[in-house]
Image (cartoon, rainbow, N blue to C red; front, top):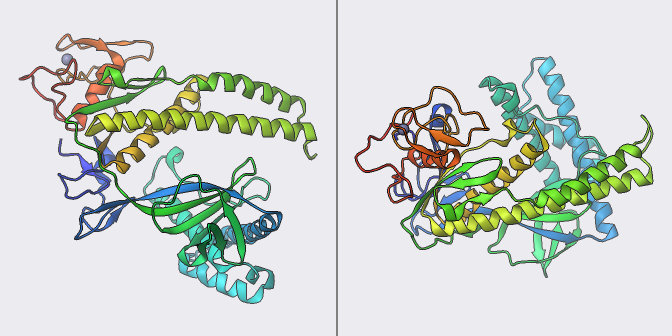
Length: 443
Ligand SMILES: [Zn+2]
């Protein structure tokens, strides 16, 4: 089990808590910075005090006056123009065989602000941030090409942002905003009323102000919040994702059936889909009022389903994290299944939200969450470690081992394989490997 690599370094390499990645192949390359006192993707350990903090986002609804809305939209218009300018420049630089790095783009911004009065009217902080975002997203795309990632998993080159397709999103660093009298003051004199649904745990280091597709505005603050450790329980759990049951675990009490809240919403969604199809505008024409209405209802329903899904996910994650010290979970990537039936898509979305909630909850409460590579987990026997010659078809619900004759429900077997792959001893877990049976090395 030497392939376990701490992705989020904790106190020390082995005694630490955080999220680890376990398993095969490329996973060995995901080595994080193991030094304590440095920040590794979210978790930070203070050098001397040992007090752990984590970077977390706290999002609040905004009340936006008509003036403020016009100002925000103006800022976004300028930022969007800059982004599109960057896209064009980068394309040209590529064609001419020139470099187009962040420093060059920064210079471009300085020059553009000097000669373009309407651009200089806007605050410089969000403009610098959008240039940085562009540079980061281009660097990522180039890196994926260099690493010859399969096309499906590549981050695409940053593309033109169209006015009516992209919702505004403005980023402000520490010097670009302040909180005064409970209100959010942005650079450029924009004042927003925040709905403080819960208190901010610490001084925020940055804020993103954005509008969702329903037209609601939000402020999302980044803060370093202290980690709240939970008392140890001595228990471990293995988790496998699936279509019928969102999560099958090594503990029967923690299985999560696929939540059905999509069903009622799904009926509504297809009704709005039909309405939109009936009212669909002819090519080149703007959508009618009825079309826009149906579109908005559809978006509202969709947002509601997503909220319900996240609520279920968080409640389940809290329960799992409270009852277990170490959590071995399949590192499922929803993208692979997305292009199939509606049921699969709904299951995918539920798994994605649940996995995310579990990782976040584990981090918040200093639990050890280990991500296990999903390859072949349905083919291995959790009792003797033998690998079946063929993958089980999805319709086959029981796993029968040809080597030792063990019979167990397919998903329960996979959940136990997760434990083994993460280097955990499933002793004490129901139906586990008997003492003395050989333990198979992870592939
Ligand atoms: Zn076996």
